[in-house]
Length: 489
Image (cartoon, rainbow, N blue to C red; front, side, top):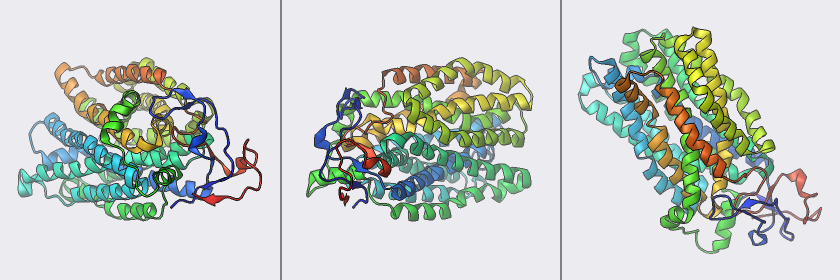
């Protein structure tokens, strides 16, 4: 069932150079066999964007809470006399969730290509909310001993497994609903949700840190942000259950006639290996810089540089608010100039400016810290604005959810989610507090190579799908007849 509309009696030629199905972006002319153009329903597109973005906000609300309250969690679940060991243990539990993300991707991705994007996204929402809510109910180490960190780890594994299907599904959902010429702008709202969720979680922790005593925060205050996840999950589930399936998936079901599309896992990997390698490289630079700035830097400012916890948190929150303001404009820019130039600028910026920005953060006053963090935040927007629309365009409709889930989560697990743990360990071994800059520079080199090898997708149909048009463009589009009756898929 879909409310996407098409002109059934005519086929409109789409833009040349659309990536061919099964390739990493080889150019070819549109395939008339894909069917007539899809005419998007603006109301449905807005609902799809809101529901997808809210799920991402839910995921990153948890990350914001966990990252900003990491020092407190270390004392609650990993009591030891060594503050660095506590932080390492806490980030170890944080990283453990990322180790199961590929498993979640291999389960939820193929399932989304078979039973539909909407059903799987509803399921991942339930699991994410349940895992986060459960953390708020776990007794402390003082109450039940070693069982406390074990239960924390179990809850984190549930979260990691569910998020294995979240980002790929949400970005696929928006990409398959959006008109070709606005996919970058609409996709950018997914990361707007990320920032909103992170700001919500981090801001709540910051407020509680400022208002509560250390004893109150340790005894009960730390639970409050996690317990909020329950009501948020119910709202998100309601919004997602009201959505209909994407036009692209509905067309795949129609082609399969009586059966749902069946795609072997092997086809999603070996049949898409070039696109998967590009996906891993792009996600690597995106997530290393993302987790470095949003997850690691609050603890870096406090534990490594000795800044007051509240001041450091406020600076990072200010950077995220600035990123939110710029995000939709940057997304629209990717529709105008292309995804590749925007992402290439981000890679070049991290390569050149990581060291100067970290020197400002390390050696300057509060204004210098804000300037250095702000510079890194603006570079990160180059990725947050472009990736939600660029990544789904690497894969054809038939395997998009599954292949993107696998590539995205393998890269996040190996490089993104482990960033706080690896950088903390490297600083501990080398004593060099500039390690965050060097780590981002290495990621920028790898990401830059991937950007160089990918094909431009801005303004072009998704591979395996016909052109997707806005309603006002439909009557004037070549190959369509004004006044043609519109029907449901």
